[in-house]
Length: 195
Image (cartoon, rainbow, N blue to C red; front, side, top):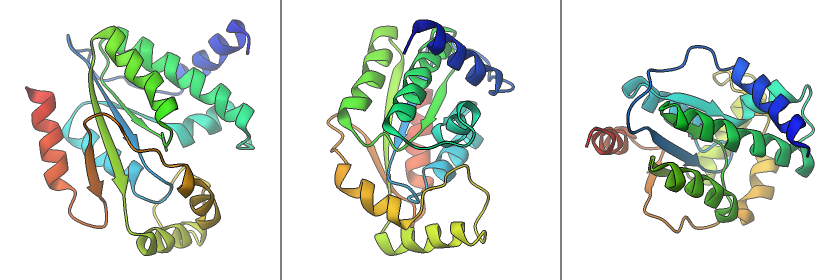
């Protein structure tokens, strides 16, 4: 992908972000990862209610760049290159970010680690999970339109295809099961950001 295409993509994504939170001296990047239907977006929204962070949700950003999306490898590569650059630029401006994406591969997460390390930003990693039966129910409700609106098009088949590609997070991280009370993990993250 050319640098002009990347800049055009980043520009389109930046225009879609709306009001940015206030800049801080030491911004934090929260990377939320997990399979479809595990509750990443709900977790991210709950966290953003307690911390003035900007949520970058990959499913919504994909639809900003591609209408309709085809979910090809090429499309995903283009999307995540733009996401990583916009995260870098936001952190450089002191804007705290929650990145809500599947982020299943350690190789892809390493790019995020590198951005945070290079900028001296605090990095908080969160692995979101839920029992398969709960995920199946949630994705089914989503397909029937009986669940809260979401930007994700993933169904049970997508979940099953992606499940074998989950890499262990090799850095210190929080694990949260969204079929249970997530408040204790939210409290810990709020405390960590406040330190």
